[in-house]
Image (cartoon, rainbow, N blue to C red; front, side):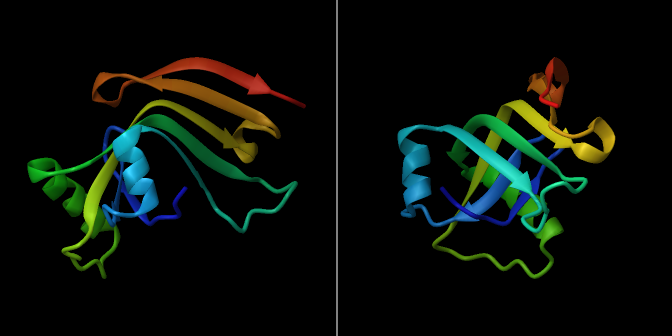
Length: 129
């Protein structure tokens, strides 16, 4: 489990910076299957809430992939400064589940599969109202 600042790329990948010896980094090395939830933590029950959940594979990046992740991260966080002891990680999602109560109505989730090049394919819509 980890709370992190992150950036994203054009094919829905998420990148973040972390210490390789942190528990979540060790967990990724042991089992790269990873889930991420992104939402505004100040949302309140009954509002027009929205968020996204991603399920996929994460790994520590090296070489060109790490440099690309750093560019994405630095573009989002202007105050970013490299920390030598930290490494970049990337989650490549295979499934995305989103909710947007303003657009979809309450208690409705849309699930899509993420294919090559970030192509999305609808899987299902769930509504519990």
